[in-house]
View 1 (tube, helix red, strand yellow):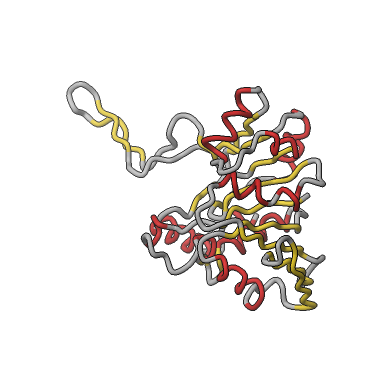
View 2 (cartoon, helix red, strand yellow):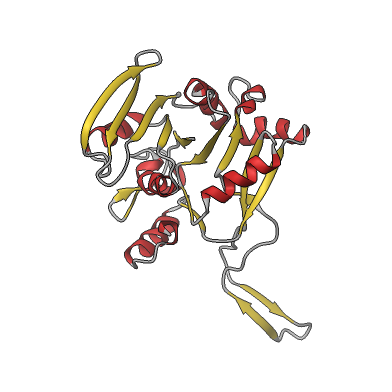
Length: 259
C-alpha cells in the first residue's frame, strides 16, 4: 500500500508568512516531522511514499537526496512525470527498501488538487492512504486499514478528540469552584488525518479542489465516508507551542508515536 503525504504547506502559524522551511521540515529531536511520520508508517510495514511538494519543495528534495538518515546507501534517482518529479529509491540501513516519490504539485495548490495530481502514482492500487505532513499519532495502521476494508466505502477518516487550550473551571451558583480541569478534551470529534481511500476517490476530485471542503462533502453526500475514532495520542505541529511540546516528548524518551 502507498501513502500520500501532504507536505506542501508553509507553516505560517509556526513562524509566519515567510517561513524559511516547508512545514514538514520543522524538526523534532533533530529530524523533520516528516521523518517521524514516515517511520511510523514503516513500522507498520508501509514503505512506499508519495510526497506532494509545494512551498519550498526543493528543500524537501535536498533533504531526501543528502540528509535523510534512513536512506544512506544504494541511491537510485530517476526522473518521472513531466521530467521534474524526482523518483528516489534508497535502501534503508535496517530493513527493506523505502520508495519515495517526490511530486511537485504546485506552490498554491489546495489539498485535493495535490492528491489529484499524484493519481498516476497510486491509482493502480485498490486502496491508498493519505495524511498530513504535520500530524503524529500512536495509531494502529493495520486496524485502520482493516476497518476501511470491512466497510467497503470510498473513504475512511480517522477522527480524534480536540483538547481545549485552556483550563476549564466549573462552579456553582454561589461561585464556589467545584472542579478545575486542565485542558480537557472537548466534545465532538475532529479530522485527525490518516485517511484510507479507495481509488474511487478520484471520481470525486475536481481540479483545484480542497480535499476537506470540496471533495469529501461530495463523498459524504453519497454516504461513502466512514469515521474511525482514535482515542489514543494525536498531535499536530500547528504552532510554535506544539513544536515545543513534541520536542519535549521526544527528549523525554517517551514519544507516543514511536510505539
